[in-house]
Structure formats: C-alpha cells, structure tokens
Image (cartoon, rainbow over all chains, first blue to last red):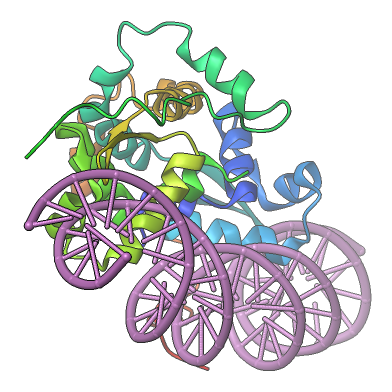
Length: 120
Length: 120
DNA sequence: CAGGTATATACTCGTCTTAGAATATAAGTC
DNA sequence: GACTTATATTCTAAGACGAGTATATACCTG
C-alpha cells in the first residue's frame, strides 16, 4: 500500500487526476489529451485505481475512469494539523511562488549572525 | 525544482513535518524522536528547506527548524478543484465500505498484483 | 471466426533516490 | 589550542520507478 503522496508524486498522474476532475474520461481520451503512450496511461491508471483515486466503468471495450473522493479527503485530513500555520497569512503563497519560480532561490533568511546569548 | 508531492512522498520527511507542526525542533531532537541516523535527518531537512517547507534558525551550534506555510498553501490550492467531489458527499467513505464497486472484470489478472520487492 | 479497436500486462533498461559510512565544518568549553 | 558537541556534506551501492517496446486480453462488427 503506497501512500497518497507517493501516488501524487508522479506528474502525469496528477495531470490525469486534473483531467478527471473536469469529467470522467476513457483511457484513450486520457492518452490523447496527455500525449502519453497508451501503456503508460494504463499503468498509471492502475496505480491510481489500486490507491483508490479512481474507479473504472466498463463500457463496451472502453474503460471510463472517474475520480473517487476518499484519497482526497485523506489528503485534506493530513493537512489539517498544518493549517494553523497559514491561516491569517494571506498573500504568503504568492510571495512564495514568486520566490520559487523566477530566478534563483535567494536566501531570504540571511541572518546567520546574531546568535542569541544562550549560555549554558 | 521538485514538486511539493515529491517532497512529501518520503515518509520520514512527513514524520519530520508532523513533529515540527507541534513545535520547532533542533536536528538532534528530530534525530532522537524519529530514531534516524543524523545524516539522514540533515539530508531530509535540506530537501525540506530547499523546497520551502522549513527554515532554520541558528542557535549556537544548533539549527532549530520550524515550518513555513507556503508549500502547505500550495497543496491546499491544488486540492481545490477536487473539493467538489467530496463536498456534499457526507458518508462517502461509509457507503464505499458497504457497497463494493465493481472492478474491471479481468478474472485472472487478479493475482497478487503489487507485491513489493520481488523480481530482480 | 476474422479483423479491428480498446485496454492491460510483461519485460528490460536507464535514472533517480535513499540509506549508510566516513568525513568535513562550525561553534562551544576547558 | 585541544577536545567535544552539533550539523552538514560527500561518496557509493542498492532498490524503486517510469518510459518504451512488445504482446496479451477483451469486446465489437461483419
């Protein structure tokens, strides 16, 4: 049993989930929209299916995949204990993204000196 | 630049974050509470630091680490488009447990898929 | 049943990642 | 300055994972 985060670590899987968030889709639709080889799509879907992220409905030769809510709820639960750290800090995300995506990751905490006199 | 989810895919890193959600901690404290070798702790902290999950305060020879909110907000944002799938689905988990979803009808492909650590 | 479509699986290979051990850097103490 | 504590870095080997290719299975149509 792999963790929710392990599953989501794969970019193509996240892309598939995002597509499925819009509407359910067959394997072939995912294949075309993501421009991935079909075996890759099937393999990623298998991982997602076994982790409970998606389920498939059989329709003739097609398998139509749709999201299932449970892993997302699990993710949401995991996030709860951390929520207090950003509540009341609106705008922090934008600043963060500005720091991360353009240019080099500057060190925004350069106060190496100023060791507090904590004698012991 | 690694994705938020890649960072969180590592169980020890999640454990460290959970500990830090309680309060800030030095490397040595994390080392002892997680029972990990010190180089592992430092390396995971480096990953977390470079991804913006934590920042360190220098205190004598110690580095005291604490959480930063931005990556968590990013995670929260990612989750938003999926939220509609579980909102209004009170009891989705319970219904899921009662009522089995039909699986893909491959009757012979059902043999111990996903056993870890075989082959090779 | 033949042929086509749709999806799944098997296998190999290259890459990425982690643990582990050894070592390096830095700061505090005597 | 020598020693100790605290943390970081380097190197290597092993294992996990995804892409790619080939093939298998399932269903539909004529």
